[in-house]
Amino acid sequence: MDNSIKTLQNKKSYLDIRKKERVTLLEILDRALEKGVVISGDIVISVADVDLVYLGLKVLLSSVETMERLRGAPFAGATEEPT
Amino acid sequence: MKELLYLYCVAKDKPSTCNFEDLGIKTHPIYFQGTYALVSWVSPDDFSEDNLKKHLADMGWVEKSIRLHERVIEEIMKDQAVLPFKFGTVFESEANIEKLLKSQNVEFKAVLDLLAGKEEWGFKIYCNSEYFKDALCSGNERIQEKDKEIASAGKGKAFFLKKKKDEIIKDIINEKISEYTKDCFERLKVTAVDTKINNILPKEVTEKTEEMVLNAAFLINKERIKGFVNVLAYLKTKYLNKGLIFDCTGPWPPYNFCSAVKQ
Image 1: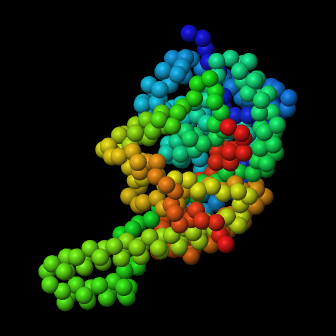
Image 2 (image 1 turned 180 degrees about the horizontal axis):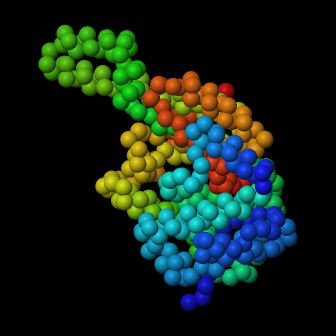
């Protein structure tokens, strides 16, 4: 028990690394909605359905804009492998 | 309509916590040859194909359900490595889940072995491009040169030259952002077992005034977390007052590192 508390405290002191409770919905959506093991269950969320969620989130936060930017390419600079 | 089975994650040991009273759900494991699928019964009102589609347009429902998905997996991963499934993976029967565990038995075990003792950490960089504009462009030779040309040009040409200048500014900012984010990524990468670069998310969904310029995930050996944190501290000092905002979160279920499982 003591040990686990200590671990937790250590984690809290990781500079600005935030504890999960404060993590935004976006952080979770960014992972659980599109990533993780993608196996065809009997019912699955399609790519079009994912767009629907982002659209919902976007409408919630601001006005509607085009969908393309949500599915934009990753930032070019850092994708290159180091040589 | 028949109840459905929601699949959260697969793990090698029987999960110790199965009753999430505060969340109002009760999970149970389904076993097949060394792997457990952690599932719970869900109502077709929520998760039938048609209803799920409808609910996805309802952010309140999505938030509640996806946070629950996350909570359950986080609880299980306190004790052991897990393979988190994508949100909304639903089956019609226990037999179908057993079939999945059977057909993917070797792959699931192999990836779980790879993930054992490791944590996923998220690292995003945001950038204040207005700050960049001021910091980078004052005193820049290419810009000063253009300014001179603009000053001595006629009205029509000046307009054209100003456009050119804006392009140069954009290039300079992009070069710098690219250089900085690459440096951060490569330095953190040294401490990681695996890395992943994800799509940039636009301002509309990040709720930030700054632009996201890097969205990365790192798989870190638990024993080497200290190294990761040290690099992060170094980067914070190095990029102090440079218009970058670092956002590091974790530990996460290894959503970004399950792709070795055959699709």
